[in-house]
Structure formats: C-alpha cells, structure tokens
Figure: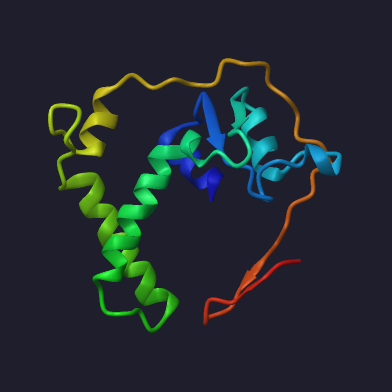
Length: 146
C-alpha cells in the first residue's frame, strides 16, 4: 500500500508514526518493512514519544472526525460497505469541505498549492533480512496476525 501511494504521490521527505508494533522494529533487532521502504530512497522515519498522542495530533483529529462520521451512518454489514463509507468520507473531507485554516481551502487544494519536500537523505539498501508480515483479513473483518 505504501509503495502504491509513493508511485502516485511521490516519496515523502519524512514520515512520523506512533510506536504501534508495526512501525518500530529496532527493539526486535531489525527494521520493519515500512522503515526499509522509507530509508531506501533517503526519507527520514521518525517515531512519536511513547504515550504522547499529541505528537500525532493532526491524524488523531482526523480519526476522531472519521469516527464521528461513521457513527452517523447506518452500520456497515460488510467490509466492502464499510470501505465505501470511508471512501465517501475521504472524498468529502479532501475535496469538498473547506478547512478553517489555510484561507478555507480544501486539503487537496492546499496540498496541490505547495512545493513538495522529497527525500534527500542517504539512500539505503533493503536487506534480504527484512521481515515482511503477511497478515490476513477475512471477509468478516477478523485479522489473523502471522
């Protein structure tokens, strides 16, 4: 999914994540796949301070807004129906709803108006020792971690 986004939007100069178990892998003696994908073109990979969700406040606020939207919808009976609801929200959020900051521009208009920062750090090679997880989500939404 990250590589698909990078093809469309380009690689970011940096990424900030929380400390969810899928992001940092140094404590397990290696790198996570996302970290390797970011470091390969020279991007910077940062983690927020543990137990400090304010560091990722913008995405936390987005999640709160998305949850509020979904709470006002009829409950989705399938993963496909839920995905359609999320897609509808994201299209509205990015392309229709003007934000209070930024001259009431939509997020897409603000994004398109800016120069993009691109990776400029040292490039690394993704090693053969990089472990990639292949988790499975069944049609009912149950995740099986491998």
